[in-house]
Amino acid sequence: MNNDTLEKAVIERKGQIDQSFRDSVATINAQGKRNFLFPKKPKGKLYNLRTLATVVYLAVFFSLPFIKVDGEPLFLFNVLERKFIFFGQIFWPQDFFIFAIGFLTFTVFVIVFTVVFGRVFCGWACPQTIFMEMIFRKIEYWLDGDSQAQKRLKAMAWNAYKIRKRAIKISVFYAISFLIANFFLAYLVGMDRVEEMVVDGVAKHYVTFASLISFTTIFFLVFYWFREQACLVVCPYGRLQGVLLDKKSMVVAYDYGRGEPRGKLKKAELDLSQGDCIDCFACVRVCPTGIDIRNGTQLECVNCTACIDACDDIMTKINKPLGLIRIDSEENIATGKKNKFNWRVAAYSTVLVALLGFLTFLILSRKDVDATVVRAAGQIYQTQPDGRLSNLYSIKLANKTRKDLPITLKVENMDGEIAVVGNALHVGPESYLQTPFFVKIDPGQLGRRKTKIMIGVYQGHKRITTAETTFMGPGN
Ligand code: SF4
Ligand code: SF4
Image 1: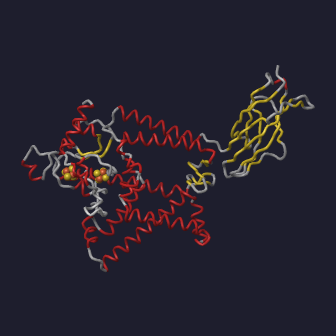
Image 2: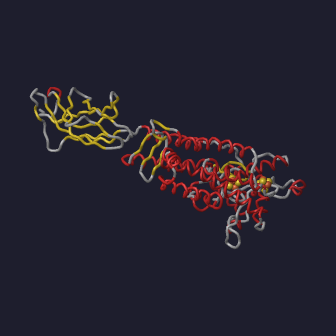
């Protein structure tokens, strides 16, 4: 099917749908007030898989702050003190270019990933969805029951039962928000600071404690009250879907070719021209953003796949093939093709792997010590009593680690002696040092007036970096 035909099929399809769903948002009622959603508890293969993925996700989230490399956290995002650690590597403001290139690479990665795989990140890896749907929502089902029970509780007049129910839910939600906030804070300031606060008491760490309570309250409000609105009105990634997705992107999609014309089961049994959709609304009832995916891809869909499970359950019950709602591209749905892995997916995936490789390279190739060597301005060579020539240099060292670094220098590409002026080179943790030094070289090794020399910077026997400069001689 060429693009024109595909376009026609999509337009024709849109013509068949009652577009009035675009006039309202499921989470706002006719009076313009918030319409709280009570999605039915999902069940099915994909939901089980998401539960498994969540267990792994949470295990990683809660264990990373405890992992240390050389006494430093594996990850730290201390924005206020401008300290960043990725995979145990400390990044300084001087590493800004790595951030800039890394950020650009990451942006391209997100775009390419979304173009191919749609919003799978939102449903399966975004912390907001994971915490909301797989922790807080599960607890809500456990405490307040399924959708109908929750609706009844909301509609109920305030009485002792409702007050008790609400008090329990608020306490549990706040306690879990507090736990998450502790770990969130650990990613910002390090687990050591959080533990210090616990051991020393909050009076000594009132700023950290105030941040903790603020984060807890924000998380509580988001998961207790704001919920899906975070995805619908706040998340910039969600707002970008309209421009990132195209007809080949993999999304949660309803197969209208197979499902339409929809109709109640009784009618469908008699009428063979009826589509497979029995208009049971099971897919709508489980949707955490309250949409009807049968209207087509919508901005509100976070690709949580709950509607796929719900519809597969119905298809099993009525003896029809699964996958009336499935992960597929708009093009495949329009053309009836089945292939999900085409050259485009392969090519874009290769680009994604290359970008990831580049990002990893950027992080791993970063040096712990920056060394800049410059020859003293306006100075030429001096002849030493032993006949060797000497040049005066200045070295600027930045120690990005949190360890003391005793440094030695060595001429790498020829025989030469280095004499540091003053004390031995010793750079304190996270600090700079600038000091002059002489390089003495036998004139027999120098060919031209200016000779390139390499200065190796050593910590013990380990060369940590090499700086390039020139040595002035008499020349020919
Ligand atoms: S339409 Fe389906 S995949 Fe999208 S948010 Fe609703 S339930 Fe989840
Ligand atoms: S769950 Fe399946 S059969 Fe029921 S309304 Fe949704 S698409 Fe139709």
